[in-house]
Length: 77
Image (tube, one colour):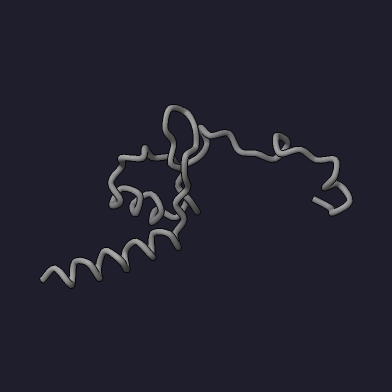
């Protein structure tokens, strides 16, 4: 969209319906989120509770989580 149209455009004109997004519940397992991100179609996973977005997980979030998990698992042995 051209910059000169920014002041007149609204979010609703460009948003993607929640039903068209990859979503998980807050209590979903992280391996399930990994699978959703690995399939290549989702650049993010929305965390939804009671019909409201309460969070978002991106590939970089997942990478940080995996590093922490591996570090914790390695120190437990």
